[in-house]
Image 1: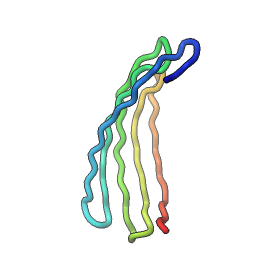
Image 2: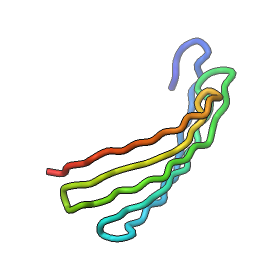
Image 3: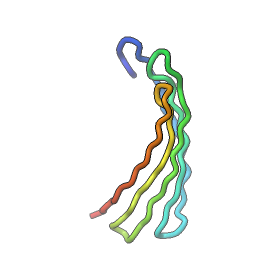
Length: 86
């Protein structure tokens, strides 16, 4: 629900495929679609691919790269993070 002048209610839906290649490596991909959120814009299809490298049970390196179209502008994203599980 997106109230306001010129705003549209919109939907975001996606599908993920992920697999553990080995105990140390998980890889995956995501496709998603969102409808327009403002009048005069269009919906778009986006994607991400990424993975997680598991150093051990507590230390992980996560990364993803992807592409989206938001309000008729193409946006590329890159994400890199360290995760510590206590």
